[in-house]
Length: 381
Image: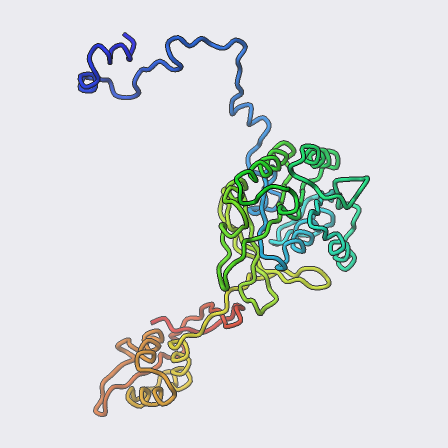
């Protein structure tokens, strides 16, 4: 008896109480009157696997082939410069990637789609940095300055044809805002990104889309949600990189992975721009705001000789004269390990403290005020 008829005969309450076999229920899929559609066929993931070999990277752990990657930053931070030097350069020349890994095994072409009218800046950088312009292709032969419109099917086809014709492993869209005439705050922008994602998937090229952040508040951290426009923009890319300047007074920028659905997030990388190109190095960090406790810690180090007993009363009085509260001094004392039994004792004249000897300290990495990484001795207590 079909399941639906059995339910009608017993009633729903009785059916639910009746003895049933464990596992899936037997149901009629598609309805009892459904007829098969003639000449209907589907593919399977086995067919997909014949065309897609899994995740492959243009830049290991950063930029995948066959997908769209977004690069976001505030205006003027260095998005286009990074793309030109850090992404284009290793493809058109014999150079390593920005993360220090070996570049492509052979030179090839790149498709550069300028949508912001910044060709003069790009040309100047190519002159200054000594980069060969012939391998950097632009979409239109009849008008090299014509911008791409990503809502125009003919322009999208132009991108795909250029990738197929020149075998370009990388397409750079600089930037998303100038490449379409839609509303960034509308989910309709997903159609633009879907089109680019489709081109990437069909051609196996990596497509990097440069995009601006919304206006960030002072000292606001850059996150995956910082990009301008609809949240649908974030949902349509598999990898999102961001560039910021943690130390606004410094010259070093930080490249970090804001979102990735592919594997383990790579460590941030630092870079700075010069007239000769881009130098890569350690990622900068936010300047450390020195607290009252930090200052008290430094004061104790300056006024206590390691391994020698000092009067706690005298130290406290002198520290107060120098503007430190007893609370800040005690917190600093705790950090320095002076509270350990071997470093605190009571004598006839009162309590004494001893700063642990240098042999009992451990060297750790500590950020300086400038955000640069320095090595500082800090007692483990």
